[in-house]
Image (cartoon, rainbow, N blue to C red):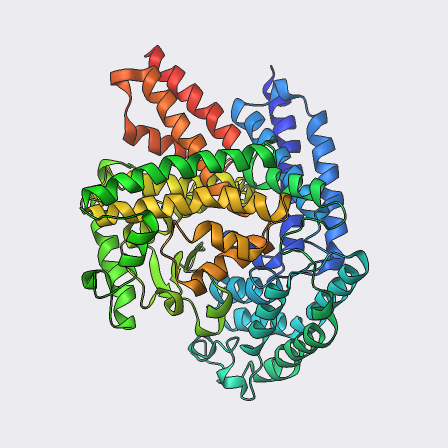
Length: 564
């Protein structure tokens, strides 16, 4: 093969990917901060641009098929495979019922997504940055009109939200409706004054765009939309729901596994983990069922040492545990991100619809954040803290996603390729690493880890129950309650989350099972040559690529080890 041929084909490939990357950020400008994208910094998502983006996706896929793969390196050929997978997911997501007819939920979309992305990720170091931020605030009003139009289309097509999510959306609006712009969550006054601008620089945009937009949405939801809430809590029973749910399964598991198969897998895992939980209870000398033990854990008088009395001590407790974990990690990992994980509280105005904890990725300027919902964390036992921290911070989401954003790649588009099953599977796998990290020496902490694993196994059961079998949120809670020590408010939040995010809850256990299988296969093939630290670094070097790509690369790594 000639160098000219290699250079020409590579150049065409890079040109196609450059165009696709720019089209992605034009369609999703808020995400630009994660890669420090220089364009669209004064824009927010605009639905009218989506068709143009999807056309670019289709054109790119067709052009990639026409490239002479024999003139490309193996890495470039692998990149094409991943980009085509990325395009397929983008297209699948656009055609699901959630994009245009249900443009927002209490968990995703304009209210939650925009605030989290823009306030956390936007560059705010210069006057121009703040001016761009203000421009984005001014665009919230027209964007909210698009959301309302989308909801109205959903009423016509019978694709609407469940009543509980609507009520949480209504409640969520209240956090952005303030009489005084200075107290509005969008008023990033410290950043404004830090660049020398007056502290009221954003007030007009908040007063004329942000506040009226949320008032308008709240009125629409209360007076027009709420009465059209869907009959079932899941998407079950809606037109085309069976096909749509299979699309969601493909998006979140990287596979064509069926809803029935996932439901049965969940039931099998629930039974297995329950046996381990019962054995742990017996070891602790407790007489009774899993539910009896959970009730005992929830009784502060029986296990007072599991409770943090002062809510202000919760985040410091997590920070102390993270220092212990970080000190142990070099024995299991050779690659580390430049920024430590920040642990912060979920903002008060977002607590109502937020889960107990979540992770938000960093940017080139800001570290990733582990966010704790203090309204749900206070007054509950802490036996699951270690497993949760391993999942959300290190070696889970923060470790993996920070390395993915920092890694040198053949093209930046690699950093957009995101597999829910791989990322959430890694988070759950990280919880299991707590055994080798020495984080579960107390049987109560080990029970907490089993409880969190049970939680993810139950998600396989209840997600398919909601969207494939027609379950209600109440049935979901009844199915979960015997196995988890979640408060009723947390359990309610979890169940409504699954109802509004079809398929996402499947990713955790399905992905973890796949990663555990990769490790087991590699260890079996390599025997004494298996190096767990090297295995982890191979995985971390792949970013957040799809599971099938991980399996291929791990297989090649094992082959290379055996040939030495």
